[in-house]
Image (cartoon, rainbow, N blue to C red; front, top):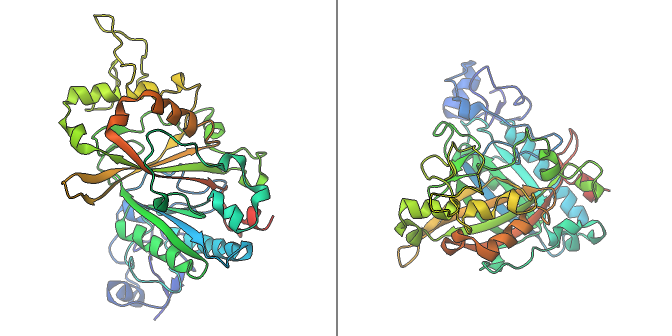
Length: 407
């Protein structure tokens, strides 16, 4: 039987990039397709959409938010150092490029045999402790220094930090899980899983806003995100080509926080009270000062009694770049739900992921401002935290982090 791709695109369109990433034949419909030359039924657009692995920046930063996500941190085993880490990143990069193009690892588990790439992205980063483990402290970025303590933190150290970080996103749950399992298996003997978190977003086609979603509080989330078309977008989100250290050129820093939403007290509020806390209408995300979701927030507007329309402690006011010296970050989160407690309260909230060129100019000043007086703080709890240096994308023939590990 001719060799076929594990995720062979079952249409003549969208198959580019899958050639050469095949293994031995499989049974069922896919095996029949290979044996007869019958291309089979077309995949939906959501299945055949692919994202390039190689490029100036790593995928999964400006990629439109996907329906499913997994975050995983790994710690190098005690006898693994720089050489072993380089070999792991080489393996991981090859696997990620293969999977994102719809290909098949040689030791494939068969989890997603009949699926297309489904917008799969795999992103890699390094934690502060990675540089100690590999003897590379001389080139550890100052921007990777541990985040300061915040008064709202209730952090679980076992679900925080880590030597290595992997972010996986896809528009199909099996494709996302398959990538996670493949990456985890490839780390055996070099790095152990420290923690994993799984999340979700709206499915493609469920909303007309591909870069805006609703969180589990029912609020439109991400409206004021920097946009790739903004003149200062790259300056805010990516390390410049001549940045320091040199191996971080075109990279970014990811702040990861597991933020539990205290949904029982939140849902006891009226819709008007919830809108006051946020400063936006729940129905369409428009600011309380009027307009549509994308209308500027008028922080100076007052009502008929002379009171601010946007309350002094409203979340939208406290987080506004206008009140934070222009500080901004690209938020690209997933929602999560991990069951219910004995009291029936949901363990649910946000896997917050914020991208910026420098966390001391992005996340830190905004979070300090939130610490000093944000009406939303009463309804959330930060339970895990991590910061990772995410180097620039790998060129063809390179692996992610090669300039660090072989520099």
